Image (cartoon, rainbow, N blue to C red):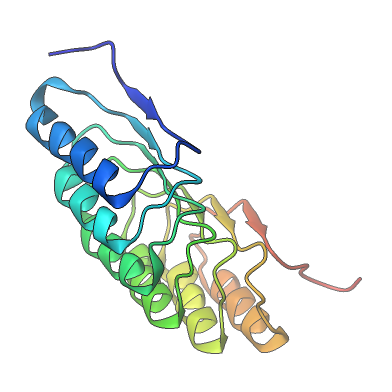
Length: 189
């Protein structure tokens, strides 16, 4: 087992779906010898096609703690793909999928899984539009999740009604661990 390579940081490297597929195959092939704790793939050109290869490679990882996929183009389908894999990476604590064009359906699916996941401590969905329907899903996640300490909702264009739903989700959870919520002001200005 290689104990030296624990972090792969390939942020802003112009990585395409083809490139990520090659990396994913290598990760999958070397999973037992590679105690990968962090995979940083921010600011690349990864779509749901590349994400599919990556999620297949990461499925069941027992060491991954941080997955940064912000500023790619995984879109709606990517939100669904991450929702499918999240329960199967029980060590994952930090997930950043900000600025990925995840629309309402993908956000709702992801948040339903976040509600049931008790290992994730930090989640960023910043830069993905959150309409009222998605805001209700965020509220649901916050009402039931007990592990999230940080939730980043910056630049999500959340309207007042959606903000009210999210705050209601926080308030309704007496066992909430949340310490940081960004994206809108709570209370009077």
